[in-house]
Amino acid sequence: EIVMTQSPVTLSVSPGERVTLSCRASQSVSINLAWFQQKPGQAPRLLIYGASTRATGIPARFSGSGSGTEFTLTISSLQSEDFAIYYCQQYNNWPPWTFGQGTKVETK
Amino acid sequence: EVQLMESGGGLVQPGGSLRLSCAASGFSFSSFALTWVRQAPDKGLEWVSTISGPGAVTFYADSVKGRFTISRDNSTNRLYLQLTSLRAEDTAIYFCAKEGVYGQYESWGQGTRVTVSS
Image 1: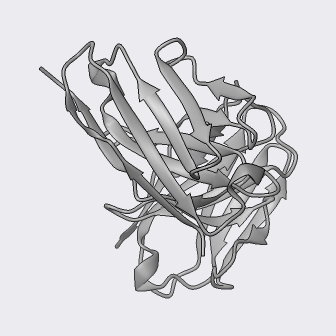
Image 2 (image 1 turned 30 degrees about the horizontal axis):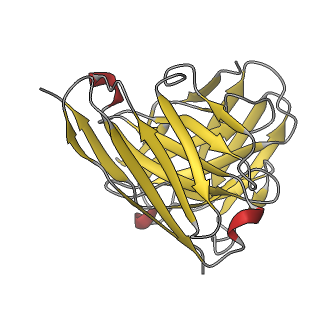
C-alpha cells in the first residue's frame, strides 16, 4: 500500500499570501496524483489531477507540480474562500487508492 | 452537468445492515467506474470500494472486505453499497464519486451519514 504523507498538518495564513502544501508518496506514483479541497459540511472538490492539470472551473491561482514521490499544491494568492482542508490522493498503484491525512489552511 | 445523490444512511446497531444508494445523472453511466469513499467524524478521507463501468470488476478496502458489497444497476443509473456486520468504526459519511478518464475522482455526491451505535 502506498502511504501518502502531507505537510504541514496545519497552516496559518492571511489572505493574499502565497501558500505551498506538500505531499509525499512512499513510492513513486508517477504523475497520478490529485488534490482535493474540502470545506466543512461539504463534499471534497477536485482541484488538480495528473499532478498539474487544473480541473474544470478551478481558478488559475491553484497550481500543482511534482512527479514520482514529491508533489506540491500552490495557491498563488490566498482568497477568503480558500480556507479549507486539502487532501492529496494517488491513483497510480491500486487497490487501495490512498489519501494523505490532509492539511488544514486556517486564518492567521 | 454530472449529479450524484446518495441516500440510505441512518442509525443502525452494531452487527446490523444498511444499503446505501447513489443516483447518478448527466453522464454515460455505464462507461465510468464508480467509487465509495468514507469520512469518519473529524477524520480524513478513506477509499472504501470501486466498481468498473460494466460492473464485472470490484475492489474493496481490507477494512470492509467480506462485509460490504458494491454493485450497480446500469439500467437505472444507480450505484449501491450493501453494508453488513456493521461496527462502530464504520460510522462515517459515505460519498459516491465518479472517476474521470484518467482515474481521478472528478465528481462527488454530498454524502450520506451512517451511524453505528447501540
